[in-house]
Length: 316
Image (cartoon, rainbow, N blue to C red; front, side):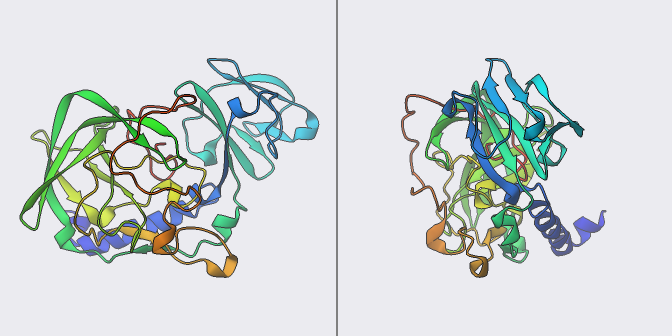
């Protein structure tokens, strides 16, 4: 038996320490200072982002002069090139300008450039993550029941837009004698599960909603639903992520007094983040919907088919 299995509280403390280190890393989620959709800049010039950026349909065309100071794969770049979406972590992005990393993303055919700056105010003001101590009452046996075919529901995202959220099944568990279910996404590569959920603490003693990654179910569908490892979504760290809100039925009626709750206060630096219960989803001016709103006309972004890495992507 592993040391982690012998000492769940100790394993949780190591997990929490790793999370704090990962989110506060130079190019972690606190470093995101902008997500710039190229459709908003038809001339190709993004304010405060060097170079000329234009979507070409299947790629992004980048033009840069020596004055732009852009590097590709660590080498100074001038001229023209074509770029695809960057699927790796921001710290390994091919494109940089001084200390910033520029990450190309694509969402349902729409292209954007994200800027990660290790000198961001959010990273400078970070003082930690409030998290509840390990509680074995929130490590629950669960069972995954696949749908048989993927489903997509429209859910509002933290930036106010509605997007498709791909779901692969339901995760059932019992808490205090009552059966509950969460709709979950399934990673196409390794079969791990991912859920967006709310609970009775949301917007009061914890962030409005959180993520949960229960792992890979066994052959019978059994998997541990460990709310001690509930995660803050990336948009808790930077407003420029576009995290999805919980799908219908994923807001639990009881208090999940476990896992990551919210960022610790950073009032001394004046950083506006969700340090108080009323400021969850701050900067977006919206409440967590109980039902998904109708899809708006215009720009939309991707269906989630893979469970995202909560340290780097939101929904993404």
